[in-house]
Image 1: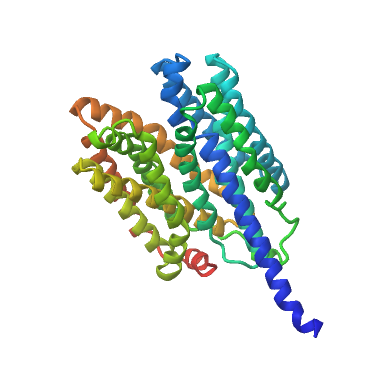
Image 2: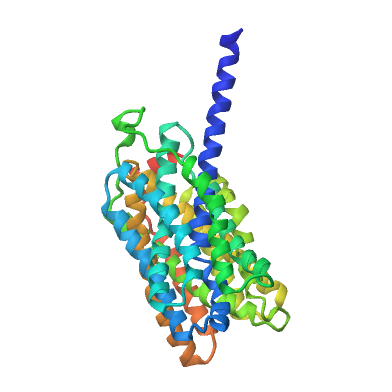
Length: 405
């Protein structure tokens, strides 16, 4: 009788462990991306009003935060040892809590710059290290290699970063909001720390199961170009669409609420994109996500109605999150020996777009006197990205990557 009961118990235990790993991924996203990185956006106006942070200083802090993100990405691309990556992941979790709380302990622009740089680095702890560790665990235990569920944590992080300042605004000043947010981050630090498993020394399925299957050069070049285009669409949308909606008469002064709508669009749809990819294939699913992001940009460029603009914000959330999760999953499948390293290299192209696009779109906006030209530029780049995906050659390695799903 005991032998009959054993298999269900083992299956239940495995499912429970999988749930814990997914919860760790979600928690790490909320902590490092939602709080450490994105919280600065809704708290910036408060800091300008109460801490006398200048517009120029605020812009520099945002730039320095992104420099930290890119530095973290480059570091991960250079680290090959999986155990070292695991220790780096844990260190970044702690740094995320400390840098968030410490923002409220000083009014020095130099100190803020150091803290924002480090906070930018922590974001890669979840986006690259955490997802890489999860893929390694999923592969080791013979589970489906998908990242939709943990990427729902990115949407949750956006929601938290939008709601938290709204909840604290009438009780705390700018410094208290930073300190309280850092302490609140401990709630997410605990599961992100204890439930993220250390990577195994060797995969139980043997060396063959862990063999990298790099695609042909043309496939990789087109895929990187497509992700660059997605980066342009993402950053231009983040820069202008949210600002446009927040300045509508009915939503004036409610920019945080618009940011929450973006997050609400991202939370449930990341796992749904996994299902779409299973049914249609990864590239078709990516094409659909690209199309939705393009549609959200077009909505921002053509309408000023409240309802349709909020729909556009929600579409933006659901599409960019799906693009990121599916792209990193595809790359992780192609490079199972060290998925985080391959993801980091892809993220560099995405990051390059976020450096170039704001400058170009800002110039277009200044030249035309409105955001519409910049948005249409981003939409055109997204269409170019879709063309890159359509031109991907159907090679055996790509077919194998989809078959592994």
